[in-house]
Image 1 (cartoon, one colour):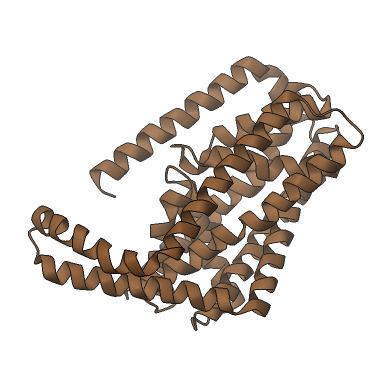
Image 2 (image 1 turned 90 degrees about the horizontal axis):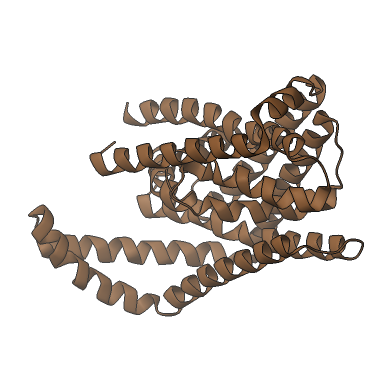
Amino acid sequence: MEGPQRRALILGGAGAVALLALLFVVVGVDRVVDALAAADPPLVVATAGLGLCWLAAWSLMLRAVLGALDVPMSPWTAFLVYSGAAFANNVTPFGQAGGEPVAAALISKVGEARYETGLVGIASVDVLNVVPSVSLVFLGVGSYAATTAVGDRVVVAVASAVALIAAIVTTIAVVWRYRVAVVDRVPGAVGPLLGRLDRFDAETIEAGLADRLGNFFADIERVGTDRRRLVGIVALSLVGWLFQAAALTVAFAAIGHPISPLIAVFVVPLSYVAGATPLPGGLGGIEAALVGLLVPTTGVAASSITAAVLVFRGAVYWIPMVIGGASASALGVKAFE
């Protein structure tokens, strides 16, 4: 890990620890610990199992995307690779945006594919996950609003999420619309700059960058034109989101405060907006966002909500971190042999 990356990770980690510490101070450490101590162990284990089901669903999603790119991968290998990608996302700032280059390198090594193909694979998974998440937010909020008044905090969170997603989708659409111009002009603008910085031949850099960009857009087109496969990929994404919502619901049951699954359906994807922060995997930010959304929507004490959120995040953040770290290390060593 290079100096700037190391500094970003240290600063992001320090920010996450500070944010979690502030959350515990505001909520009350003793009350959170007491709620965790009283948690039902079988339901905690069930929460962890649902977290693994989510990881498996999205690993199959990655396998389907890579299949469209003629990169065959067994379900087990796809699980290990996606776990490694999740690990990369969870230890780099800005969530998926920070971890995608590392995940792409892992995919390209294990799948023996071009780097840009690996980047298209993991980026396609992240982009396609937006479709069901937005649908679940509107479905969940609409169903919740039919029986309960929606607070200002939830309205602001929904509006922020929609604005962020709209900005991302617009950017992607503009880049895709002018992809030919991007391939023609970006290498010519970036090549000489990189040539001066790295003291390499600018023409060689320009040609290599143009080739990579061309392959990148060609791979995206291959994924997007296989409509039957695309429907299956989005369905797997939806299943993964529902597993996460189920994990949060069971986590609350483990703490002794059952909540409506409809709340979890829209709160989980909404909270991931906090992942687009300079915190490793959104650590601290997502926990705070979940507590902030669940306090006005559940009527449960903040200490119990925080305990349930910690159980949930253990299942969808820390367990994939352990599995992903081990698999990324193993697959990385194998790739270099």
